[in-house]
Image 1: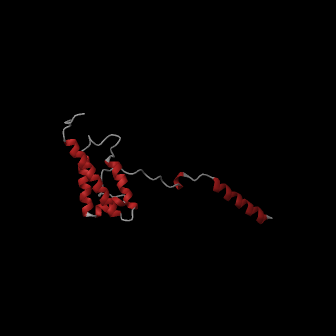
Image 2: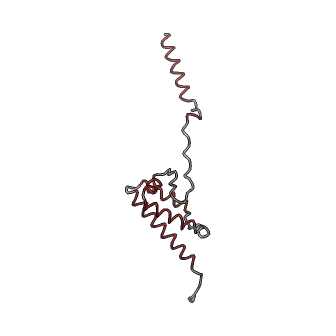
Image 3: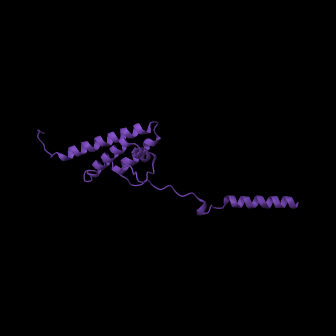
Length: 133
């Protein structure tokens, strides 16, 4: 009888402990939001795509070029149809989930460069209307 009482008591304590909230110190820390960045941060790469870019001379050069062109366009880089450089960098980082991570990054940089160059070219021309309506 004493053994049953002891067993019941242990079961009761275990049940109470199971339903108690976990102390804050024991809970995992929340995942921080992605860092604001215009390009790969090679001083402290935190993402797989940054690590790959920083370790590849060709991708690192393209990253520097794209970042430089993007930073030269702050007045043009706004509006509902424009993807900010930070948003593009986050989207570019999704290449880490592709089978060929490097090829995905190369294509993403080529696409972004084309968009930025086209935007720069369009912005450098004066607006004119030469045709009849």
